[in-house]
Image (tube, rainbow, N blue to C red; front, side, top):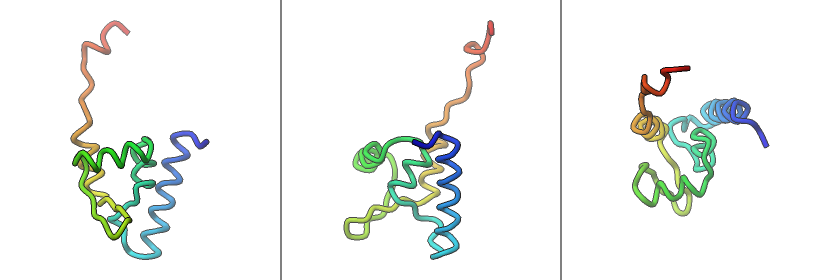
Length: 88
């Protein structure tokens, strides 16, 4: 299994390759989102079902806009708390 940094490097490579190939740089597959967020595909499907992340569906294919992924990351990023770091 690839470690986190290698997975992210692979994700970036695939996104750039996809962008050049078809110009659809803004849409990501469930697999690409799972690599970007470092969580399993089943969790992404559950997030879609719960309405936590917007998606587009074409037949059975689910695609997620890159901006929606980045918005999800921003909504779920919490500031570091100073008291946690005290005493170290």
